[in-house]
Image (cartoon, rainbow, N blue to C red):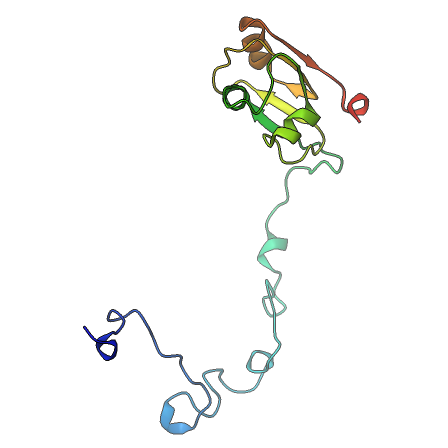
Length: 157
């Protein structure tokens, strides 16, 4: 094989369609945009506009409510906490707080606090202090011989 014998697989590359390059090209004159009007000009963005007809998003009924002050928590599973303890990234003997979880790399950012969920198994006896936890997570930690205390978000800051 020589350099001049190298080529792409068939169909791997397509030539760019050159628009507005004369009548012989098949895409000359108006360049496939039709005749006149707003959409034939450049710089047009009419997202959701239906030519004066009531747009679909306004015709459909609205339901529900979005809470403006909704809290979003960083989620941690017990299985991951155990994995980090096994990898010596967390110390099971010391109290594990939200700041310790961030320092270990288990949680990226605190958001409105850290919430512990019971996915996975925990065998180490740990002391966890977090903003939130599911009932099953609290039971699982207690079963392993540890304690999980839920601290209010204001006290944690």
